[in-house]
Length: 64
Image (tube, rainbow, N blue to C red; front, side):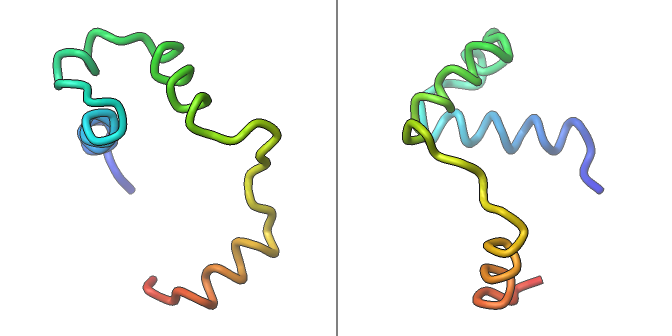
């Protein structure tokens, strides 16, 4: 199980790579601002994978 701090560092890094944010940009942003940028990167009408798709991916990429 990861901690809040670990997840926050991971998300800050992803925001830097994906959106060019510096750490200060990440920490000053609201969750809604970050969510809006993430939504803009997802094709309209895209749905999350269902259980069958996840199982197929786990079989194709069994890296634990």
